[in-house]
Structure formats: C-alpha cells, structure tokens
Image 1 (tube, rainbow, N blue to C red):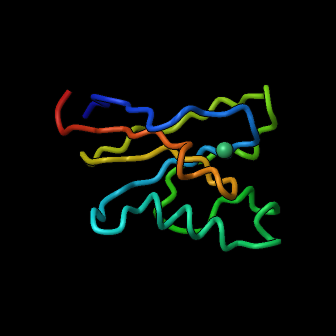
Image 2: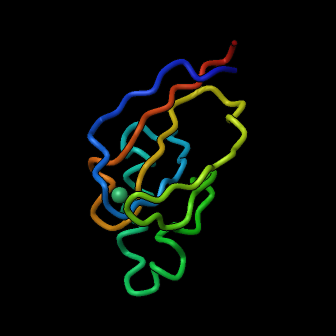
Length: 107
Ligand SMILES: [Cu+2]
C-alpha cells in the first residue's frame, strides 16, 4: 500500500490542535465529520481526553498541542486502501483543520 496524495482543505492556524487520524469508509456521512461531532459533544470532559472520542474510527492521535509546540506521531499506514483523514478534533477546528490521505492498494 502507499499514500498517494495529501490534500490540505484549509490553512492550519496557529492555535491549539489535536491531530486525529480517522478511517473514512462512509461516504454518505463522512467518518471524519462523525468523529468531529463526537469530540464536540464531549463537553466539559473533553479536555481530560484530549478531545479524542473513544471510537474504533480513531486510528492514532496526538495530545493537545499548544501554539508553536509539536509532537511526532508515529503510526502504521493502514493496509486497507481508502480515504483517511488527519483532523483537528479541538472543538470548532475540524471544519478547516483536516488533511486527506489517500491510501491505494499497491505501492
Ligand atoms: Cu485545531
């Protein structure tokens, strides 16, 4: 498998962010939007969980990153071809802070 493309759908602002890798297999209601909605509805408990909802849709994630900070995130590229997203699940950020990863079946 290989990652063939990444598409920035928005400019990543210098604000708090949580990068969350999401498998997207539901084209009717994209999984990335489901995960973003779940994170938004974590309410006051969200910060305790880095605004990462507990769901099998989440493959890997960072903690909350403050402006001008960074964290290396190592993860295995999924073996299943498909569309994946890296999305910021900090409340209100998911609409613009997302990157599409397209994984194909052959390298
Ligand atoms: Cu963000």
